[in-house]
Length: 443
Image (cartoon, rainbow, N blue to C red; front, side, top):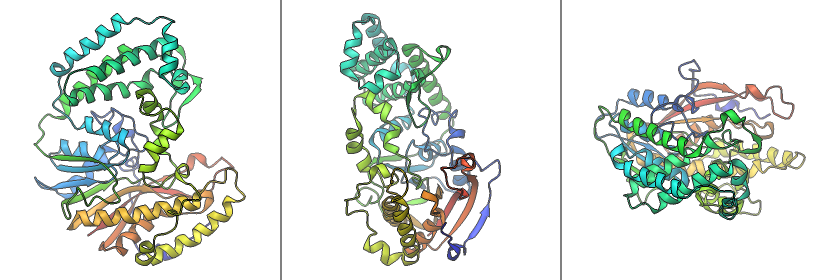
């Protein structure tokens, strides 16, 4: 294992109490209005955003920025608190869902007639076994395995009817999001996040009907909007589907009074694969190649599924080596170890190149964050360290050091919780103690 004694000159504050230990998870957000619409395994707690925004003492007209917007936790909280926000998300499918979560003026009056149209289409187009052939043409095999034919047919009618509605785009997006958020609830497969296991079938008592579940979802979402917008102060919110490594074309310098985000962890989590079920159903992808072409190529490096070993991009950039010499020297040693271990490990995962790509990207993102942040303001990053093949990469410390190297005044690390305990008995796993932290950079 790789020790890092030279990176211990920070102020370490352990706050992994019951209050803070779930900040890096989506548990708090699961049942919260609007936040819980789309279960996002890579999400973080809305309570973390609320707590830190209050501590930041932002005033009316101030802006918080999230370069990894994801399911919109930072932006939804900011809107509920009357604080302006900017969000950037590279995953186009997730971006569309988050955009619909930020439209709070939709009521039953807006969607009632559209729901009537959908229900009428369902009554006209009754399911028969002959429809199975249509479904086989419309959907990949994975989708056919995850739903009862009659349920999938109902969902297909709902999807097609929404696409043909003449209502405005916000209403159509709302109805589309409700459908997307219904899919795993009515699936017969074990669709635990983020994976799909079509060979594992739910017990019959857990299987729900398509239309009934969908309409229930719509009404719940309408109730969420009614509750969350009560007593809110008007604010402005700009969301972009783009690359947070360089936002100079659409985000001004020194515009944000605070940054709160959770970057991808260096843990080989495939964010593109997370939405495979939903994208296949919505007709936005048919296979692995589609997912790679439309999603993986747009995301920052954090998974070996993004790596081609012949790709010259997976070398440390000259600018990174120049600006972050201390961090580079440490990582270069880790890369050598990962490269050697890869030759003898099953799967031969490209953790060495993944680590290079990850820190190249983080370096660019922190530089862009520094540009956007006002002087005297802070940026907070929720993230965990990692140990691919047992080689410890203290991501929180490294990000703090990179931040200072590119101009931030200083950094602090607050340990939120310890991680990896549930894998302790697995002989195939490493025995490195991991943690989840809050890294705070001050400009």
